[in-house]
Length: 177
Ligand code: GDP
Image 1 (cartoon, rainbow, N blue to C red):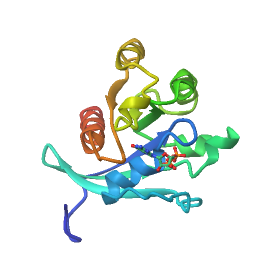
Image 2: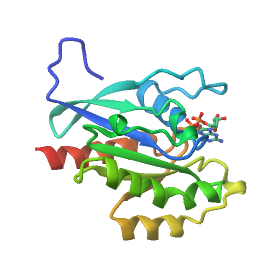
Image 3: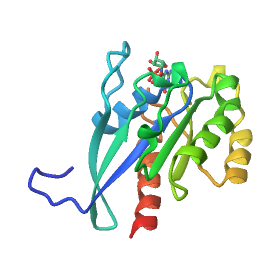
Image 4: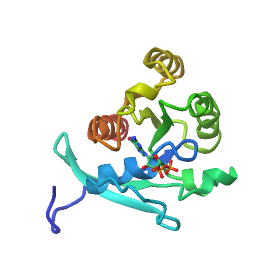
Protein backbone atom coordinates (compact mmCIF):
# COMPACT_ATOMS: atom_id res chain seq x y z
CA UNK A 1 0.00 0.00 0.00
CA UNK A 2 0.93 3.64 -0.26
CA UNK A 3 2.38 6.08 2.24
CA UNK A 4 0.63 9.27 3.27
CA UNK A 5 2.67 11.56 1.10
CA UNK A 6 2.16 9.65 -2.11
CA UNK A 7 0.58 11.59 -4.88
CA UNK A 8 -2.74 10.30 -6.14
CA UNK A 9 -3.12 10.25 -9.92
CA UNK A 10 -6.82 9.40 -10.00
CA UNK A 11 -9.80 8.95 -7.74
CA UNK A 12 -12.25 6.39 -9.09
CA UNK A 13 -15.73 6.20 -7.65
CA UNK A 14 -17.14 2.69 -7.65
CA UNK A 15 -20.64 1.80 -6.46
CA UNK A 16 -21.62 -1.55 -5.02
CA UNK A 17 -25.19 -2.59 -5.83
CA UNK A 18 -27.41 -5.66 -5.76
CA UNK A 19 -30.17 -7.10 -3.60
CA UNK A 20 -30.14 -6.93 0.15
CA UNK A 21 -28.02 -9.52 2.01
CA UNK A 22 -25.96 -10.67 -1.01
CA UNK A 23 -22.80 -9.53 0.79
CA UNK A 24 -22.15 -6.04 -0.58
CA UNK A 25 -20.91 -4.64 2.72
CA UNK A 26 -18.66 -7.64 3.32
CA UNK A 27 -17.15 -7.46 -0.16
CA UNK A 28 -16.39 -3.81 0.45
CA UNK A 29 -14.73 -4.43 3.83
CA UNK A 30 -12.80 -7.40 2.44
CA UNK A 31 -11.33 -5.20 -0.28
CA UNK A 32 -10.68 -2.06 1.77
CA UNK A 33 -9.71 -3.56 5.14
CA UNK A 34 -9.16 -7.25 4.43
CA UNK A 35 -11.81 -7.98 7.03
CA UNK A 36 -14.96 -10.06 7.22
CA UNK A 37 -17.32 -9.13 10.01
CA UNK A 38 -19.68 -11.87 11.18
CA UNK A 39 -22.16 -9.54 12.78
CA UNK A 40 -22.30 -6.55 10.48
CA UNK A 41 -24.94 -3.93 9.72
CA UNK A 42 -23.48 -1.32 11.96
CA UNK A 43 -22.65 0.33 8.66
CA UNK A 44 -25.83 2.37 8.21
CA UNK A 45 -24.79 5.89 7.38
CA UNK A 46 -21.29 5.03 6.20
CA UNK A 47 -21.05 6.32 2.67
CA UNK A 48 -17.81 5.01 1.24
CA UNK A 49 -14.45 3.47 2.03
CA UNK A 50 -11.21 3.82 0.15
CA UNK A 51 -8.18 1.82 -0.83
CA UNK A 52 -5.26 3.16 -2.78
CA UNK A 53 -3.65 0.86 -5.33
CA UNK A 54 -1.11 1.17 -8.11
CA UNK A 55 -2.21 0.11 -11.58
CA UNK A 56 0.03 0.46 -14.62
CA UNK A 57 2.22 2.90 -12.69
CA UNK A 58 -0.72 5.12 -11.71
CA UNK A 59 -1.65 5.66 -8.08
CA UNK A 60 -5.40 5.21 -7.91
CA UNK A 61 -7.60 5.89 -4.96
CA UNK A 62 -10.66 3.67 -5.24
CA UNK A 63 -13.58 5.30 -3.46
CA UNK A 64 -16.10 2.54 -3.01
CA UNK A 65 -19.66 3.34 -2.08
CA UNK A 66 -22.04 1.16 -0.11
CA UNK A 67 -25.81 1.58 -0.43
CA UNK A 68 -26.02 1.44 3.39
CA UNK A 69 -29.26 -0.53 3.10
CA UNK A 70 -31.10 1.89 0.78
CA UNK A 71 -31.78 -0.95 -1.68
CA UNK A 72 -34.24 -2.51 0.79
CA UNK A 73 -36.60 0.39 0.19
CA UNK A 74 -35.88 0.58 -3.55
CA UNK A 75 -34.57 4.02 -2.79
CA UNK A 76 -31.10 4.05 -4.29
CA UNK A 77 -30.97 7.62 -5.46
CA UNK A 78 -29.36 9.03 -8.57
CA UNK A 79 -26.93 10.91 -6.30
CA UNK A 80 -25.51 7.50 -5.40
CA UNK A 81 -24.64 6.81 -9.04
CA UNK A 82 -23.42 10.31 -9.88
CA UNK A 83 -19.81 10.33 -11.02
CA UNK A 84 -19.41 6.56 -10.67
CA UNK A 85 -16.93 5.11 -13.13
CA UNK A 86 -17.46 1.52 -12.06
CA UNK A 87 -20.09 -0.72 -10.51
CA UNK A 88 -19.83 -3.99 -8.63
CA UNK A 89 -23.18 -5.68 -9.20
CA UNK A 90 -23.45 -8.43 -6.62
CA UNK A 91 -25.76 -11.45 -6.37
CA UNK A 92 -25.67 -14.47 -4.06
CA UNK A 93 -24.92 -17.79 -5.80
CA UNK A 94 -27.14 -19.55 -3.23
CA UNK A 95 -30.21 -17.33 -3.89
CA UNK A 96 -31.65 -17.62 -7.38
CA UNK A 97 -33.85 -14.57 -6.88
CA UNK A 98 -30.87 -12.30 -6.36
CA UNK A 99 -29.54 -13.40 -9.77
CA UNK A 100 -32.97 -13.00 -11.40
CA UNK A 101 -32.94 -9.37 -10.23
CA UNK A 102 -29.56 -8.61 -11.80
CA UNK A 103 -31.22 -7.50 -15.07
CA UNK A 104 -33.18 -4.91 -13.11
CA UNK A 105 -30.01 -3.58 -11.53
CA UNK A 106 -28.41 -3.29 -14.97
CA UNK A 107 -31.43 -1.27 -16.13
CA UNK A 108 -31.08 0.91 -13.06
CA UNK A 109 -27.43 1.55 -13.95
CA UNK A 110 -28.24 2.30 -17.58
CA UNK A 111 -30.90 4.77 -16.44
CA UNK A 112 -28.95 6.58 -13.73
CA UNK A 113 -25.24 6.10 -14.28
CA UNK A 114 -22.85 7.34 -16.92
CA UNK A 115 -22.96 5.45 -20.24
CA UNK A 116 -19.31 4.50 -20.01
CA UNK A 117 -19.59 2.96 -16.54
CA UNK A 118 -17.68 -0.32 -16.26
CA UNK A 119 -19.78 -3.07 -14.68
CA UNK A 120 -18.45 -6.16 -12.92
CA UNK A 121 -21.00 -8.84 -12.07
CA UNK A 122 -20.05 -10.71 -8.89
CA UNK A 123 -21.49 -14.06 -7.80
CA UNK A 124 -20.71 -13.86 -4.09
CA UNK A 125 -20.67 -16.58 -1.38
CA UNK A 126 -18.80 -18.97 -3.67
CA UNK A 127 -17.60 -20.70 -0.48
CA UNK A 128 -21.12 -22.13 -0.02
CA UNK A 129 -20.63 -24.80 -2.68
CA UNK A 130 -23.30 -27.16 -1.38
CA UNK A 131 -25.96 -24.46 -1.45
CA UNK A 132 -25.33 -23.25 -4.99
CA UNK A 133 -28.55 -22.28 -6.79
CA UNK A 134 -27.09 -20.35 -9.75
CA UNK A 135 -24.92 -22.29 -12.22
CA UNK A 136 -21.79 -20.40 -13.26
CA UNK A 137 -22.72 -20.81 -16.95
CA UNK A 138 -25.96 -18.85 -16.49
CA UNK A 139 -24.01 -15.87 -15.18
CA UNK A 140 -21.28 -16.17 -17.83
CA UNK A 141 -23.94 -16.10 -20.54
CA UNK A 142 -25.79 -13.15 -19.02
CA UNK A 143 -22.57 -11.19 -18.58
CA UNK A 144 -21.49 -11.80 -22.18
CA UNK A 145 -24.91 -10.81 -23.43
CA UNK A 146 -24.90 -7.56 -21.45
CA UNK A 147 -21.23 -6.68 -21.91
CA UNK A 148 -20.34 -7.06 -18.23
CA UNK A 149 -17.22 -8.47 -16.64
CA UNK A 150 -17.91 -11.42 -14.39
CA UNK A 151 -16.37 -13.29 -11.48
CA UNK A 152 -17.54 -15.49 -8.68
CA UNK A 153 -16.02 -14.56 -5.33
CA UNK A 154 -16.25 -15.04 -1.60
CA UNK A 155 -16.07 -12.17 0.85
CA UNK A 156 -15.80 -14.79 3.59
CA UNK A 157 -12.71 -16.59 2.27
CA UNK A 158 -11.48 -13.58 0.31
CA UNK A 159 -11.28 -15.60 -2.90
CA UNK A 160 -11.30 -13.43 -6.03
CA UNK A 161 -12.31 -10.26 -4.23
CA UNK A 162 -9.07 -8.36 -4.86
CA UNK A 163 -8.81 -9.83 -8.35
CA UNK A 164 -12.31 -8.63 -9.26
CA UNK A 165 -11.67 -5.10 -7.95
CA UNK A 166 -8.29 -4.91 -9.68
CA UNK A 167 -9.86 -6.05 -12.94
CA UNK A 168 -12.56 -3.40 -12.64
CA UNK A 169 -10.06 -0.65 -11.75
CA UNK A 170 -7.79 -1.65 -14.64
CA UNK A 171 -10.69 -1.40 -17.05
CA UNK A 172 -11.67 2.01 -15.68
CA UNK A 173 -8.05 3.12 -15.94
CA UNK A 174 -8.13 2.04 -19.59
CA UNK A 175 -11.27 4.13 -20.18
CA UNK A 176 -10.02 7.33 -18.51
CA UNK A 177 -6.39 7.38 -19.60
P1 GDP B 1 -25.55 -6.65 2.05
O1 GDP B 1 -26.93 -6.44 2.62
O2 GDP B 1 -25.61 -6.95 0.58
O3 GDP B 1 -24.58 -5.54 2.37
O4 GDP B 1 -24.98 -8.00 2.71
P2 GDP B 1 -23.96 -8.19 3.95
O5 GDP B 1 -22.59 -7.81 3.55
O6 GDP B 1 -24.53 -7.54 5.15
O7 GDP B 1 -24.01 -9.77 4.10
C1 GDP B 1 -25.27 -10.45 4.31
C2 GDP B 1 -25.02 -11.76 5.02
O8 GDP B 1 -24.29 -12.65 4.19
C3 GDP B 1 -24.22 -11.63 6.32
O9 GDP B 1 -24.75 -12.54 7.25
C4 GDP B 1 -22.83 -12.02 5.91
O10 GDP B 1 -22.09 -12.57 6.99
C5 GDP B 1 -23.09 -13.07 4.82
N1 GDP B 1 -22.02 -13.12 3.81
C6 GDP B 1 -21.52 -12.08 3.09
N2 GDP B 1 -20.58 -12.49 2.23
C7 GDP B 1 -20.47 -13.83 2.39
C8 GDP B 1 -19.65 -14.85 1.77
O11 GDP B 1 -18.83 -14.61 0.88
N3 GDP B 1 -19.86 -16.13 2.20
C9 GDP B 1 -20.76 -16.45 3.17
N4 GDP B 1 -20.85 -17.74 3.53
N5 GDP B 1 -21.52 -15.52 3.78
C10 GDP B 1 -21.39 -14.24 3.39
